[in-house]
Amino acid sequence: MIDEPGNIAKMTPMGNTPEQGFDPAALMLIVLVAGIGIGIGIVALRRRPKVPRWMDLRRARKRLDVIRRDLDRMFEYMGNLRDSESAVSRPFEQGVAAMKRCHWNQAIEHFQEARQHATRVQLVPLLVHIGMCHYMQGSLDDALREFGEGSRLADRDRDRLGAAAALANIGVIHHEYGEFGSALTHLNEALGIVRELDNQPAVALCLGNIGNIHRSNGRLDDALKSHEDALAISRSLNDELGMVSGLGNTASVRHDKGEFDKALELYAEVIEKARRIGDHIGYAIELGSIGSVYYDKGDFDRALRFYEDSLAGARRIGFRLAVATELGNIGLVLDKRGAHGQAVPNLVEALSILLSIGASGGQLQVLLGMSRCDDALGRERMQELLNQSLASDEGAADMLDRIDQLRRRRPWPTKP
Image (cartoon, rainbow, N blue to C red; front, side, top):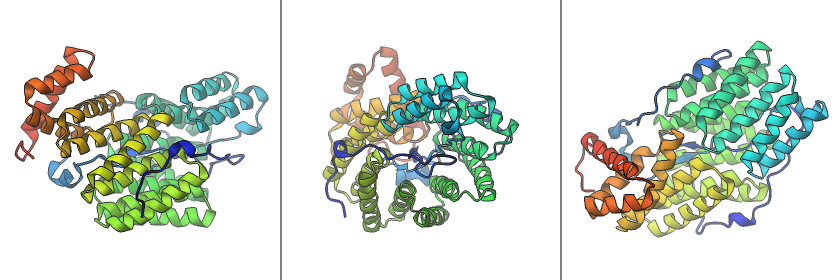
């Protein structure tokens, strides 16, 4: 059982990666809880307009008090870049090192330098790494563009592992957009490829991400099976980052099933393992997951401490989706405690990030919190707080309009 948040600042840098192929120690990248086939990457780039995705409120009511995240894993594909000429391998290695320090812009610059000298068959791993950096920064459209191009090139050059990497990562992006069917299609295609190649670390990665989509769809038994299968593979390979992901996702399903104490036991194991191996991303995100368990247990003070520690870690590593998640959760706790004036700035910042990114998950929870604050404070005070938090009167008007739209859709009384 975990009683207090940890200290992210004491963590060590992430460990080195293997020399070639799929990296069993691939970066852990996280997907909002709202939540492939070779040759369809270009289709994935044709984005629909970003409009609020009003989920089925009856199905979602049990999950509207906080924003939850899964531990999803991006497929970090190395190809043969480490064996290439120095004009490519040197900036590539510098980019990988920058990613381990969570310096995403610097990493992109190094990868773009390598890209200028790369041969045709070397482009796919570079595109995959650039896309991963864009994802961490919250530039989902940019990430999708890079992964889509990687999928097209891998198809052309018959690079099956590169195709699986690009397409699995496209699945992660579609999960962020709340497009669960498309996400599942991409990930199942990637899973088929890596099973044929007998690449077990990649099989575990795809199974874990598929389990997260099942969880987003409320299929908890299916989610649990996928996560337990993924965890078994990671344990057999002694893939510690895979174990962090598998344990964390299993804990999240246990949480959803109402098994709070079991979830906390699993999260304790995750936190200790992430701290030991220097997994900054998993460590920060699972602190927030622990906070959500305490929230559901009614221990709001402890929940707030974990959310705040998770937010600090997310800001430190520059992971915008996680920053939005924890800002939203802090605002929801403050709203629950009646500190509505303090809640509003956190909720406004969270929603602003989510809207700029285009992520569907979390918007509804934040808007419900803002609606409750509007009820408690009154429209005049709410507008004053919005004007203080936003750069323009138009921004404040847009937030109020979103609150009013939600009220017209909400099937239960305005007062909580």
